[in-house]
Image (tube, rainbow, N blue to C red; front, side):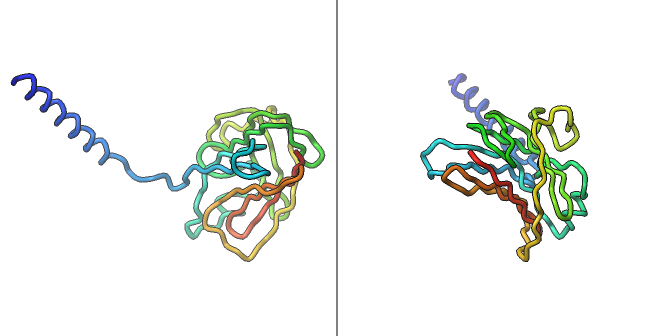
Length: 180
């Protein structure tokens, strides 16, 4: 009988500790983790690329030229730097990027963005950005649109050896075209 009471008491303490621990969680991340996968032939087929990033929210703030300054390296999202995984070689702007994992940074400008692929993985923000580890960079136009997006987002589209990656937030869209 003593063992049963001891076991019950231990279980009670365990659940009490679990309840107290759960109450200490202060809330969900304001910039949730997301990913975009490029499968040109639909679900169930081998992916060509995957991007893992966090989705910051606008919350009434001025984004580009505001909290994301123009002409400075940006982590391209929030929290940990954006990571892109290429499952085959891809050509951006006529330059080949080998299959592998890279950190993707951007330098937003009013009319163009510089896109940077870097080999320094698992970095927080742009604090550990090291230009010596850049393997590819190029510029693309930044397009002003009428839709005002609350959250930063990324999406792939394409087929027949050609693809596009859309990055959009606030009233700005940036497209990266690539061949695979």
